[in-house]
Image (cartoon, rainbow, N blue to C red; front, side, top):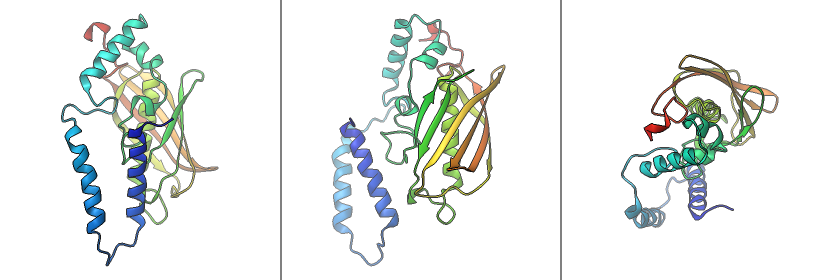
Length: 232
């Protein structure tokens, strides 16, 4: 069951889609603007102005949670936590602009982990509306790029290989249609020192829309990036 915050974000996505596609020329919109502004004003006092991140609104709470989970699991480090402590990307990236249920500009893309051999893959699905339009009746290439970046980054997380994006190489094979079911698949290819190589694809039915390889750099700033438990 969704939460009120998730329902609010869903309603905002619907508003964005309607406004994006509505014929507004010549309309007097003072009432609508005032209503939207009133909602923003009502929620404004609850804004959090501290460190912002995809995984938590309050950074300090996030660190405490990681430390507690690592301790409870008796892990040797946050690599185990990153690999086993999380489930699907929308759970560990709730504020993501791609998969975040708590981010109204996210489509959102749905992604989930699939246990395999030798590592865990990330699969996903999405339907991109008019707000994400680029070429006629097609998804903007930049939206595809951020979606693939999220896909491959999530692959790193669920395999205990937290890292920042170093390079992202995308080959656009075909246009990606709007308002159509799109499927995604990402997997860990190999690791060389601190470099993590991940690959992914994006399909519409049997049509390959895009394929990519990302090189991610492990960092001590990220879970799974080689940080000892004592760092928390």
